[in-house]
Amino acid sequence: MMSTIDRGHWSSKLGFILAAAGSAVGLGNIWKFPYITGENGGGWFVLIYLICIACVGLPIMTAEIFIGRTAQSSPVGAFRALSRPGSPWIGVGWLGVATAFVILSYYSVVAGWAMHYAWLSISGAFARISPDQIAPIFATGDLSDPGLYENAPLNLLWHILFMGLTIAIVIGGIRGGVERWARILMPVLFLFLLVLLGRAMTTEGFAGALDFVFGPHSDKLTPAGVLEALGHAFFTLSLGMGAMITYGSYLKSDDDLVTTSITVSVLDTIIALVACMVLFPIIFAYGMEPSAGPGLVFVSLPIAFAQMPAGSFWATLFFVLLTFAALTSAISLLEVAVSYFIDEKGWKRSRATLLCGGVILVLGIPSALSGGTELFGAGFQSATGALGIKEGAGLNWFDFFDYLASNWMLPLGGLGIALFVAWRVGGEAREQGFRAGTQYGRLYWAWIHLLRYVVPIGVVLVFLNAIGLLGILDEIAW
Ligand code: PFF
Image: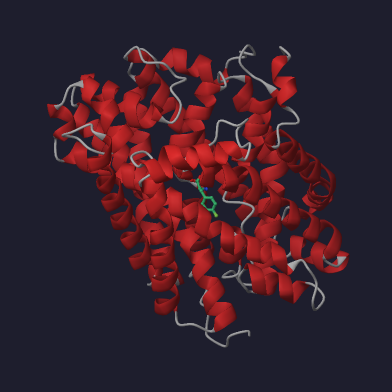
């Protein structure tokens, strides 16, 4: 059922750009990108990532905004409106809604850690503890006692707080909630990042960091790393699950989709690179390893901050920034789920938000407990291992959800979106839609060819990698 409720619109193009950039810039940029860059040896990995953003990410972003703006509806309704009755394309919309539930459930747990760390920095707790007490906080979520079981509830508490904040903002609607908060949080985020960059530039690690991120080091790059870069391009730009379809649906039909897609992608990319230029100099200056993995931001960095003059101040800036980045992304994840119930079921926003937020909160509990409980940690890991996941090693609940979303759901959704726009939408409507209101109409040919050929091939490679068929190539030195 299509609802007659006024869905709302952005107040201006800037409002849309800030909200869409808010969705794109998140934990993916500031937590995940630096650590996967570190694991893959920097240099060539970054170059390949940039190529993936330009050739796969950007065309899909434009395709998503095109679908939303044309249909003026969230993903399920949009696929229904633009395809023939009973057509299976609507499944891409369903998949998007399901993906929003999956991603936000564990995303909120990481965001909760960021909030927890912001609190530890502000309250001065970090200044009072020794560096070797930091790793146990990350592993277990507790400061006083590194025993596993007692600490799990603390992760849960911060997950609940973060979800509560996200729900409170989304309930306010598009202009009064999503856009209003993007207008407040995004400028603060930019400012904090610049100040931190200024600080990082004065450390002696800066030149080494520049070389690490932009220098040509090929020894660590593997085909799996190339595909990781591709998969991350989806995650970081919020693509493949209809977040940009949803945000695009609040645009007016002649708003320029090319300039907005380029602006959002470029902003997202710059922030990921700047995040590296903040993190690595500090990591290098204090003798830490860039390849620390997920603990780079939550273990190595706080240890470095602890040794820095005025470390609590810098740690506060960093973790507040990380929390804000996560919040604007979480808002978009929740909005995908909420807008489905508003558009399709005719629910009121408050009801849809409370219900979806509540379900996601509950779905996130196993992720919050993954580090500390037998059931969702080791037990779940051996169960998934028995199914052959991760070459039989298995994954705990949290890692399994991330694996499911990043390796399967987002690329599959992205493939569906690209194929739909490239092969199913009427050629004339597509070309007119692309050219509406933009001075970049001449890019149409490139856009359509990227969607038709480059994106599908790239995504199929991600799948082959995920089922281990390309793993054998890892053995071959480049
Ligand atoms: N782009 C976000 C990040 O980089 O952290 C994550 C994300 C948000 C993915 C929204 C997907 C999405 F729909």
